[in-house]
Every structure is written in C-alpha cells, then in structure tokens.
Length: 419
Length: 184
Image (cartoon, rainbow over all chains, first blue to last red; front, side, top):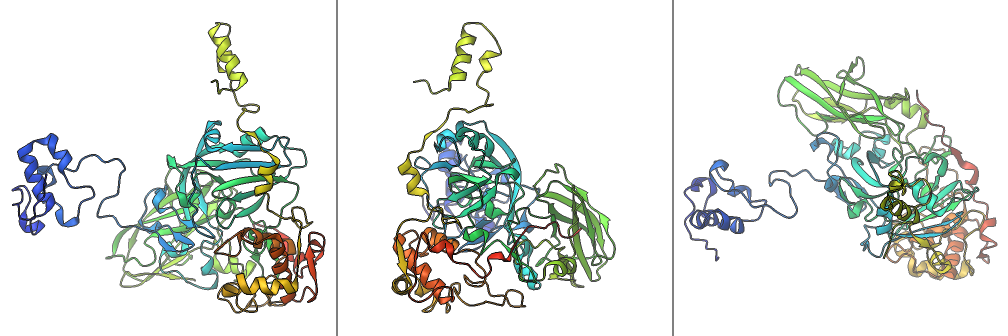
C-alpha cells in the first residue's frame, strides 16, 4: 500500500482541524474501503501526532494493538537528567508508584550494558561454600514482592545551604517507589552457609565504579536481591539484571548491577562509606553508617514553579515516607507552621514506602506558606529546618529531611522558601 | 534431565506412589534449595579486589612516590590537576584543619580515614575513563604520591601490602557511629 500526500482526507476527519491531508487521513479513508480487518494493518503507529487528532474519536477507527505500550502523545512528564543522576517529576505523578521510566537514577560511572545470560553473582568470604549463581538460578529461589521507596541519601542535599531548587523535582526528586520482586537475601545466604564470624557483607556492583558498600547483616532482615521492578525485569539504570534492596536505607546501599557479596567480620571502609555518604557535623566529626532514611514529607501540589490559578478550592496533595516503618500521621500547615491540620492518608500505608496524603483547602488569595510534617510509627516527627540545622549545621550534605516550605504569593505563584 | 532438588524429587516420587499428600509439597525452602555451584579459587580471585584497613586483600607488588609522579601525570592529572588540587575534579590534598569551619574541605588528607581506602578506590574505579586498567604496582605508586602530596609520606617512601596499612590518616578517629534519630 503506497501512501500519497495528495490523496483526499476521509470525510470523518475535519480537514480544517488537521490541516493538509496526512498519511493518517489517507489510511483511514482507505480503511473504510478495505474493511476493518485491513485497517489494523494500515493505521499509523501509535502514538499519533497531536495534529492528527480527530474531532470525534467515536467516528474514526483507532490505532491497532502494539507489542509494547507507550504513553499518550499529550503526556510529557520527564526526569531531569545530568550525566550521573536524574530526578523524578514528583509534581506530575499520582498515587504512590513511580513509573519505571521515571524512577530517579544515580550512578557513579554510567549505566553498564550487561547481558543477563553472562551475569553471575559470587558469594564468598566467611561462608561454608563459596557460590556462583546465574540469573536463571536466582529466579528459581522462593520469590517475594513488595513496594518500597529508594531514596538517595543526597536527596535535598543542596537545601542545607538555603533554598536551592525551584520545583519539587529539584528539591525531592531523588526518591521513587516501585514494586520490587526478588529473593530474600537471607535465603540466598543460607545457600552459601554463613560462618559464625560473618557479621558484615560487602556488596559490589559490576558497573565502572565497581560500587561497593559494607552492610551489617544483623540489620538486613528485609533485604532482597531484586530482578524485577513493577512487574518487568529491572530497568538498566535500576541495576539490570540484579540489585540489592535494603528497604528504608539510603539508596547507595542498594547496590545495583550486583555481582559480588563477600561475607566479612568488619566493614571494609570503602570510599563510599568514608569519604562519601558520611555526615559531617559542625564539630568536624563525621557520622558514619547512617543507613536509615528519616521520616520526610513534601507537598507536591501546589509546589514550586506551579501557579494556583485563582482563589477557591485547592486540594493539597503530597507524599510522606519513613525508612523506619510506616507513616503514622501527616500534618499540613498553610501559615508557615503556626497552625496544623491532620491530612488524610491514602491507603495502603506501607513500611518504607511513599504514602499519599491530601487535604481540602480554600485559598483566600493572600500570601500563604504551605508545609507538611510527617510523624512515623516510631513517633519520630520530621523536624523544622531550624531544628535540623541547630543539630547538624549546614555542611553534612546527606540526609536532609527538614520540613519543606512553599510560599504562594498573591498572584498564585509558588516558590521554594525556608522559614 | 532432572533439575529439581532431592527433596522435591522425593516428594514427587512419594506422591506418585500415593503415600502421602503432604510429601508432594516436600520442596519447601527451609534449608538449602540446591541452586548454584561452588565458586573456584580462580573465579574468586578475578573479582576479589577489595582491601580492608588491616591490609587484608592488598595485592602483592609495590610502588614509590617517585614512580607515582609519572603515573599521576599520565593517568590522573588531566582531571585532578598537575599537583592534584587544581581540578576540575576533586582536590586530592589540602584542607587539613577545615572540617570544623564554615567551609570544610574534604580531601584524602583531611577526611579519609584509611590509606587502604584510597588504594581500594583507585584500584576499582580509577582512572575514570579506564577503571581497573592500572597494575597493582601503579596503584601503590600513585597512592604513595597522593599521600606524599598530603604530607603523610616522605618523598623516598615505598608502599606495599605491609607498609600501606601502617599509615595513620589524620581523620582516622573522626568518624562516629550513627546517633540518629537526633531530633524528636
């Protein structure tokens, strides 16, 4: 079937709307002559161009089924990417699951290109039997799935020094949630047999950074070796074909492209757990092995860079999470923390997972400062910025979890401020 | 070819014989599942590149500050600068006495707790555009040169698996365990 630019369009498509005759218009016209069965082989690939949208989609056959789905032509949410990281557009998302294509990235020398058929996991050191496992073998172990956030320890790190990000993607976009599937770490370690002296585990990736962290075995009872994310094999930037997940811990501990687990009796003091991912205090001491991500929350709408169009009803929406368990309560303030109301939590409320919260509000058109404050099930309450800075100064970079303030000015524009 | 583990096979066999409906589910994972194979010494050696503060894992070989001068110039200076502080990437020396100030400068000399950490990192991840391309001798030599630039080694010094772990880094006792939650 040849296409032609000068074939008249189908009477079903408003030519004034679509402009000059297009391939799609021709194909639809041809379809009416050839019958529905032939049409499916003829229609333009999905997604179509915005210019091709019919006036009335009930009067034009649609696109055929496809082998791998894509989002609508009209949806444009994207990660903000620099070479070694990309940030999730939290302001554009709904619910709690991050689409795999929008899960934030952090890598230290690029995303490696790995053939799963050649990938191996080596378990050695203080074990009774050093073990080599293929991906096929790892998938044969008893499996489990759970939702969990992964948050970079540096999420919001630039906010220590003052308001730096414009949008919530800038300030909080290094956290994402997926449903992760894999085998419990404990199950695989049992296969190798732990010797009694084994108390730490060095996990190493097969990326060009050979990313390496020492992790205390006694606190890793929920750790998983994951091969799937949101029902599919992991995305390459999420560690394909195998990553560690330690729910609630800083993302760097969740070693991606995992190739080696070495059981040891003390931490190996790698660069990432000494020179990096340690929290420098004002007295010059550095906190080390700061694994759990403390309770945190942020309003995603209205949030920085957005505009509240006019006074009246606004649904305040946001996300809350804690690396130490479930979210217990989220409070919202519209007056910079002077008064608070309890937000509604959307179920499910899961441990080490984002929880969606909402609150009804009527904006009166005057300046307002919106804040959210998470209290987790341990009773820990997310600190105000001044409280956190009083404790840690402004040079620790990692683990910034202060209450975020968004100022709505009288025009409705929303700005990142610190109060 | 049967790929099940013994328990499962036995369970299936018993079930076929009609002996016990429970036995048919005998493949529970309470013990070892029977997957994977024993790693060989060669396979372990090929990947076992980490080094611990006590020197465990350091390879044979050695290098001097003088040899490190050439290694650094050839493989490192274009990112870290001619003397290791000009950049554009991280400054590798200086910063002593700045950690408790408003402008802390975290370098190998001011912040890193162990010399083995430096060796381990260079060996696994540097040079950035060709990681794991240096020989153990080259890694020892360039480690020695960086420590020399920090005033932690004499110009004539030589590093190997015995001498490297003995180096006392200035900030070695500056790391503290996690006291969080530190706010209420």
